[in-house]
Length: 465
Ligand code: AMP
Ligand code: ZN
Image (cartoon, rainbow, N blue to C red):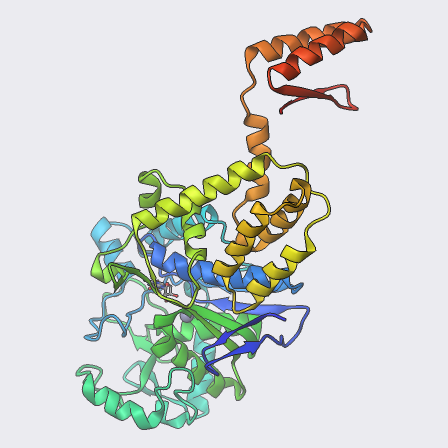
């Protein structure tokens, strides 16, 4: 049984889907005004492993991962809340339209994900294409008395939602004190400083804005994710994921507005990945300590080495990034490939290791333990055909593309000219049915370290012994 940590209950729980035939996952995707960094990708990798683990356990998964192409401010990173939309800012700087910026970085983001074998989402909805759905939810919230409009901006009335804070622990009784500590001086039109914006009035020269019942404006960041998740997964769905910094306020606010609008529980399981750190600090654009996949590649590493590295640390633990660590991950990956490339074709697998692997994966996605099982299997005395069968099965979760590597390595193996000449000669002799002589040549080829297999279709395969 697959078990993982649920931020909502603060416990490791058995996973019980709403509908076993169709598990829904929503992952908060990137804001596309820059390349994503490997900290972001660590979080997306955690979601990818979770998704693969679900499929490994026999579930069908619908994975929705949005593209935030309408800018938002991160209250957690930027307490003074200057209203600059990063996508617009980037557009102004580079003389492009916000749409061009968003398109460019969406493309790079999807390519980066592909490079580290993150399975493509079932759907990547764009925030800018779901404004209608956001306006619909906001209208319901106003009608139900959970939201109010002041001069073109709509706020969620947090104190009306009694269950506020169950996810993050920032319950209503604590919120007042919290906000006294970080007094936010602007947005003076709010009834209460703890209220958050669902819809914001556009400043007159704003580039990205939409008509709404409250005038021209743009959505708050939290409502984007509520609208897109509900549209594709329903009012109530199984799993919502993101990095640990999204717990508050983003996910807490998503819960408040979604549950207030639908009048029922929003999400059963909340899964949050730990930070990627660099020299003990969170990797983050604002700290200018980020690395991207293209930077990793420029230093001569494969993007996939980062996937391996990420799996050496439990997804909830903080992980310190170092180049030495990446180097070790690349070496381990190379070693694994070299070993696998000499293995026989997969046959019946090793039940003993398959059980251990599944146990590790199902134990809150313990990939460090799962990798240890991989290496135990590799070093075991089982026939290589059995190891191959099991390892390629494991790779459905690992995502290291091991089966592919085996094929390409085999076909790309350099065969000396001398051997090729002998093979040609043997072919001629065989056509003349001079099998005794052709067998002698086969013997010579063997002495050079190669063997040949005559295929049914008449071709010959040359293999290194
Ligand atoms: P953002 O584009 O800032 O909304 O971030 C996209 C995703 O990356 C979110 O799920 C964040 O929680 C996550 N994230 C941002 N920085 C890091 C980091 N240093 N380590 C792990 N995850 C991160
Ligand atoms: Zn989100």
